[in-house]
Image 1 (cartoon, rainbow, N blue to C red):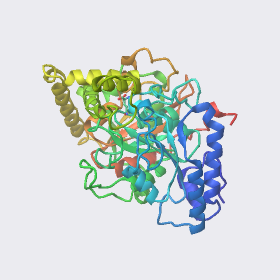
Image 2: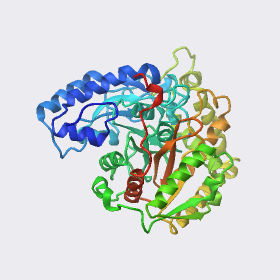
Image 3: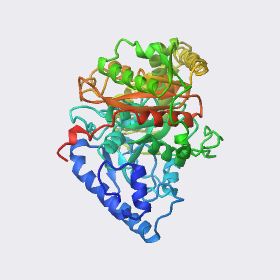
Image 4: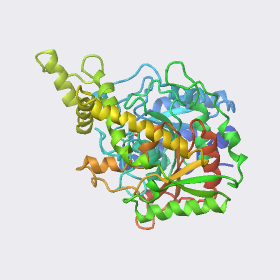
Length: 493
Ligand code: GLN
């Protein structure tokens, strides 16, 4: 018999719903109550779709459980960068504050087909640009483990929401770490699939060659369930890969231990200067656990990783400057009404609609693409990207997965890095090389830090489209890692 609590995970809730121990209405009402209790503290959401969700819940209860729909009756929170039909999709920007799409993004469409109920849209860094959720035009989200700390970014809202137990899972996007880093900061499992695995149709573009959609969940099994639903070829996205989707949840238990597996330990991550002692300790303990399960660890080197931050920020800003050119006040979003002519209207709309970080990136991105500088910056960055990809491919011939800490530190304090964009960019040092390669990565909570008491995450990288391997290894390792208690920042709720 399942009882509804804020720490019920997706798999448990699904069982409760299918056996009718819990009605869909109860599940949605419970989630709505949890939202009311926690939102004043964490500001994880930009929009709650309560009435429609309650109506859908009643309808599903009338129809009765359908096990073929694998997310039947499960409420979910969606990062506000994914188009949702009839629901605001603001990207946490004033520019799109009033934008209501008339179609669903493919990932959301697939969640709905599987029976999930869209309960709300989550806060984020504006247009997914940031690492702490402090770049939202609608105020930062806060970390449920410590309300003075950031939940990470740019999917800070989804991470804070799921960690607070608002819903059992959320969808985020990862362009340079934005699923894995907030998952790590909030004690969740975060999965960035292989580039092309999940359709980007209806995902508001930031860095199109890097963006991927993926789940934030409480367990590896839950991540496997969600990936199974959202993955798969979509003709509406020309970069979507026509690759078969394995039955991830069914295959999880195929590796009861890690005997015969080799984990690659890249020195550029583990010996990095800024790696905090508590992250090192937490991640080293996770490696110990893996060895205890029979895995072998091998040191390796990914020497070009040190150029990843520079290459990533050049490429992502170049792509952003081009992608965000469409917000001109004419076709979408905010329009200035005072301007005297067209050029002034463009300038005033974009100056008022975009926040400072977005403007900084458009300016830098335009610069690195301009004639005379293109070869020095953009072309060089593209060449470095190729080198990084080759090194990762090469390394993955000598090991089954690569292991690394998710971020150099656990969640930092609000305001700690907002005055220094470079310091903020550097927090992505362990996540954005993977986006340059397109390979899949998963972050897994491995305990609480000795100094801060905040969650610590370790990440695993696998070859392209080897998500099954990633999930299996993470699932087996998860059993050996400490289970996290309830988030301490919400102790009274
Ligand atoms: N922090 C990185 C950036 O600002 C990554 C963001 C993301 O993955 N969306 O670009």
